[in-house]
Image (cartoon, rainbow, N blue to C red; front, top):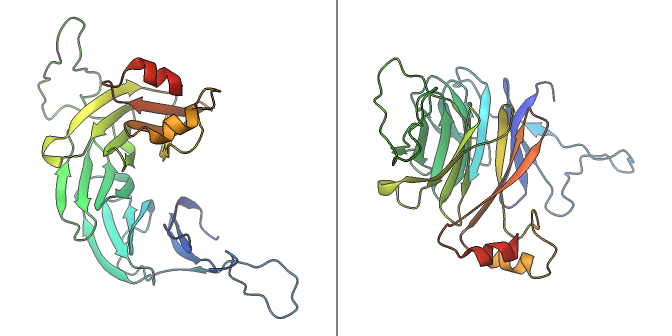
Length: 274
């Protein structure tokens, strides 16, 4: 690649993947049988090489792609200036839209929704089929403030134009439990309940890592990560429909695995898994 890639996303059927970055958006198609397309000449013994294909980017004003997502037949590419470009598998530009934010950082698509992590504490949610704006999640407390105080219920902070908010650097979605995990530039993490967009709530907020967090991925329950040594741990984890597992990476040189479980579940069952 002549330009560095900042993002990569693989299609659900694993027959192609897309990379994006600074003046870089390329589609890589895989062979259905061998995985790699065989572009070699007859009797050539050199390893096969994947050929990249670029879409037409003449309508892209600032081609710096910071987020990629695939939902059904559509590929979503988000630029740093806050524009969403929608392509099909054949690299045809279907539509594009400015989401009206100073800066965007990443995107994620699940269950017909496109989540865009943006500057100033903004998370916008769009319908993947029409790009209709569905909701913008509430901002976190302003930098230097908190809405929690010992001995008091959650307090409401008066906001003004001078307030500054942490940027949302990434957002990952647990489709099974309808939860979104958002990472903020001040190292805070929010776990959102997004089952009903009319009543979105924060399930948990926490600080994490001792350095900037760069990315997050949801981990499926069938992966035996963070379990105890009991033979029943993995089956119980796979059967648990209220557990959200995710992994984060940071400049503090650590990769951390997290689990969020519904507080209504008895602690004994939780301990049997972990």
